[in-house]
Image (cartoon, rainbow, N blue to C red; front, side, top):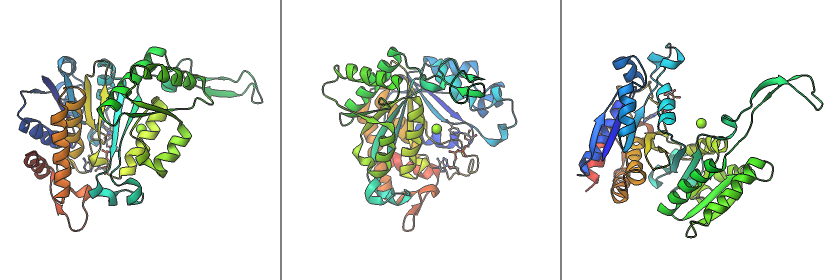
Length: 356
Ligand code: NAI
Ligand code: MG
């Protein structure tokens, strides 16, 4: 199995090094090949997504991505900016499903702005569709308003669209993910008001017939937002469209209060995927050896589970992360009195040791 390793810039290389250490320690015959991306791609080849990097990402079974976007590239023209690499990879690899777990280990319950009893032990997965919805629907623009009380004024407009196949493929990803967890799926829609999301709901119900072992329920997005802050542990896997998913996944991430802990995956139709921490390149702490590598290490665990068919190795990594937290080891971003403060590399070593 071939893994493309794209560390990127900023803290990317430091945190990816730790995940690579952990992957190597599993003793599996992975072939890992490195390539520059983002600012590192610009330095090496004058482009944030060099041809050779894209080629490697395409031929690999999975991509482990660090982070991109160091401030020193802020003055470049938009097509040369590091962030273009992520967009280019998503597009070229046909990644349409974004998986964002929000996990709050009981040891870190104090990091959340919500009461510990509401969020301690939280472990939910939000699946966001990435290619459709009001973000890309045509027509869109600014025009002269054709009717109603504002007729004749300028109006902005966008079009919400979802094709049947687009809904079916994200539904399959969601049901399969639910199957790998606790067999519960909540589809979030706005079927009471929007035709697009009544259609979404109908397709979800139809695809559900292929997954009778998974319990499906439906929730309106406004209620889902309310429940996420009221009783988030009621959820297990949630699936929703591009816009609702954008908003709900950020809200869910913040329930945990610690961006340095949150992994993510973006998948294509064949479970090939790109795995990366939810955070960015953290230029403010890059090169200091203090970044939290756990989001990246947990992203590697997701890669094993979703793309490489190595669920038991994913479990091992996740158990090792829990163990180092129980041991009281903390990087600066999650540090609390009474714990032992460690750097990036020490945290990586601790996870390797905890693998057993
Ligand atoms: P950021 O996530 O890089 O940083 C936000 C804050 O969280 C900073 O104070 C940072 O030090 C801290 N932080 C982030 N990751 C951490 C970690 N692993 N350990 C400890 N502390 C951590 O977001 P920001 O500052 O908005 O963006 C910085 C750059 O990253 C921008 O250029 C942005 O475009 C880019 N970015 C890249 C992403 C990616 O590579 N997928 C995603 C989000 C932002
Ligand atoms: Mg967002």
